[in-house]
Image 1 (cartoon, one colour):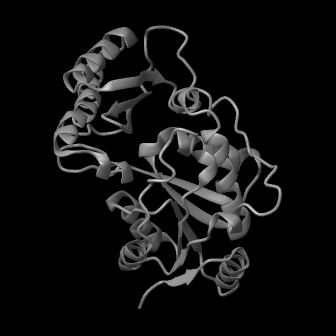
Image 2: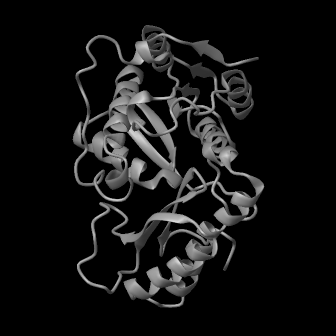
Image 3: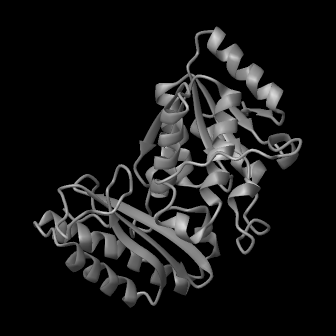
Length: 292
């Protein structure tokens, strides 16, 4: 049986409220569609901890900049519904932009500090768009558990912050990045990569793995680790936007060049025209390419 398909805010709100009245725990996975194994792993995990599993498919226009890929972002709703149902979703919510942004659209949710470094420097307004649409979804859904992948680590920290600051009745769970066998993080944008570009993109998980290797071996010098990372990225001939080591909780810079025993290494780079992001929390996450 296919998942229930809803398109209107009032329908989704009523559906979630009815599920809770029936004693069913509501789990939610927010997506922009073009589902891949990373999304489906979130749905599968949600099905293990909740009863009513709602997946949203909405390409959110407010998180795209003027020169970004809103128009060409892949839209595969029928396929998404089929995959989500097989993974355990009981409901798919697929609104249009007018449904999610009615009226004057004068309100934005801005999460300061944690949204400012990394992608925040290069994508002005992006995280305000993300925070706004996520807050809308949480307002519609009510008390629930929401699952997100750690590949979009900064986004996850922005959402955790807004939930905490706004006292929203949402439990946020971050799950490990899903990767292909060669270590490349699953992303809807991977479809844009040519076969040659995909091979070059492997420099990103190699760089993360190299950092994991030396950090696990005891290296704590920030500059030395970043030089090793840069060396690997250069081998892929990538246009690197950033490769940074930051506090894994609030994304602040470290006060000294000596790292603590837990640190976020985040990378963003263009491979051809495709922007890729990836990360590892050193001292916490496993190596992306299976090093011990």
